[in-house]
Length: 360
Image (tube, rainbow, N blue to C red; front, top):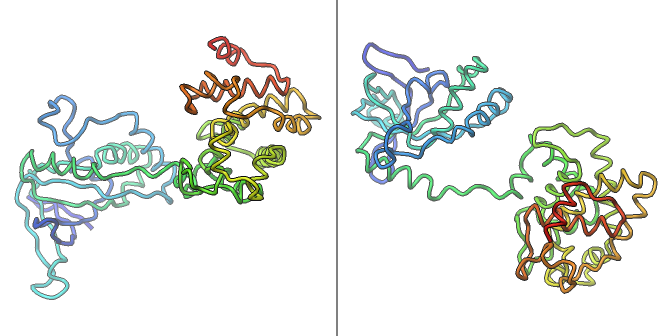
């Protein structure tokens, strides 16, 4: 447990070495994060700062994540530089415990965040919203400051190699976001999705034997349900969307042939629009209007999907989803692809859809 002496902040810590420099890892109570760690605010010119400006839109989102999940959140470590020398008192002069001990930091030292400034600001806000969070801890990697140039290089190094996980992996692993749960349910339940879905990649390579990505199924299902990121989804809605995709899949002969290995998915992607995520999302997007227009016959109407000319050579796709010969994934292309499907299935267009149609 941390404590303050008359002149120092002291933390139980572990001493180590990175790139020949001594560093220390300690656990810091969340309630002290905003008091201990400094962030170079916006009034300091960028060339004199050690990190980027805060994106203040991110802070409430992270804080809400913490305050809404006080028993089920995860925070990665902060990295910080201390502006003055520190004292480390090891538990033992030799053996394994010589690198375990107490780190004492002068109270007048500046502790500058090198990585984690958004987490720091969000922790401050979250503790105000949920004071009990203040008793929790976050790990901190401390370095002794070697000047602005070194701090700036640390920030560049820490962020240069940080790669955001793909939407596919996030969908597969996210057990908190409801739409990701629904996407996983569909992949496990709809036979065609179960066999023909890539669970790892956001885009499918030419050699892949898969036809869909889990992220494209998520986006198409989100379009069908017309739900926001934080909206709840009922069991009845999950049943409806599952039934919808089952009938869509059974209506698409080319998809079924790919499942039965009568045609290669790579050939479908090369020659047909329906083998791309933009078409899947468009089919999802028209679902509610289809059910509203034909409440008792929407399943029969879906059979007409197979009679659409999905060939990339068909003139109807140019400027709609084919832009300069390439498949467009834009929201406008999703709407325009949906418009063509709606016209074929004799479903009225909305005002927004008519406005997109007029553009081409």
